[in-house]
Length: 444
Image (cartoon, rainbow, N blue to C red; front, side, top):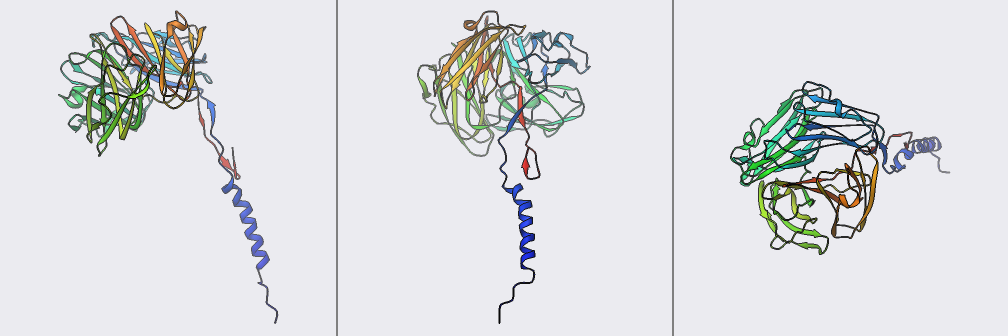
């Protein structure tokens, strides 16, 4: 007897094939490589401290800029021209700047002498909205009392969580679980408000709701002399590069381990002449769980060198450089992707570029305040070394410099009279990753 064919064999097979044809393209189509699109609006907020001038600029001329003082919203007309670099004295509690212009890459800086707050030189980027910000080495003792400033530049209420660590462990911050800021509000917290009697505090600011920017002013006349401004440092990591170290001063490394296991840290120096080598006596620095540790850096780290950390656990930290009259804090650097990083020129301005992973050639161009180019220079950096350049050697009379150093790390260091300062370089917000969208089984 002949075998009977399934009654619905061919119709079912056809239906399955139709389903597969409809579904498989969406499953098998590979997601495209990320693309970048020009940013057409940028905002930042500059906390106000007496003596620190606000500088507003950009990589390319913008369409328009609006600057307002907080909390009253009064306009700051000196910062309104988006076609040039411009300055304004501090106003209110903070100045918030919003600039439009496709690919303009708007940036803001604070620079000057902190009047009545250590009288030291400070140069810092005006902060943008943060999700997770770390501040290292803040003081809460007589002669060294830092000020943490939180600003809500938005139209809605903002809530942040504050946590702090000291050499003896985590300390409780009053009302730190949910600190609320009204729209436009600025909150100034002395180190002694966070944890009185602590000489070394690391503070984490975690945004929970709304928008907030954060910065800290270090000042003192005792164990820390002078002043400096810290903006949001990177989250703890197992690998960190720090540079912008001034010359001829005492340097100390402040490390924080917020985790639950001991961190074993190898400290290396990355220099121009000797490449990368482990700092004497610092091949295995232990940082206990949930604590802060301070160690001295040997004098073999020359000006223009970098410090490289390799840790068994995620850590955060700074190099604190102390001269007789001023202090400079050099925090962790972010690797520079393709794109321009911008640094203001203040006094004797030096650039350091670090290439831990591969040879690179940094491109530097100096401009005046009218955004006219004054000169260019190429700075080759060998793998495992650093290289430095005085901006005045590229051109005199510059207002700012644009640096391209893809794959490397860069920082500026400043000397102006007795004052010293350090600035980590980051790529300006010229473009951003554009989201890929899929429909009909195809990515667009």
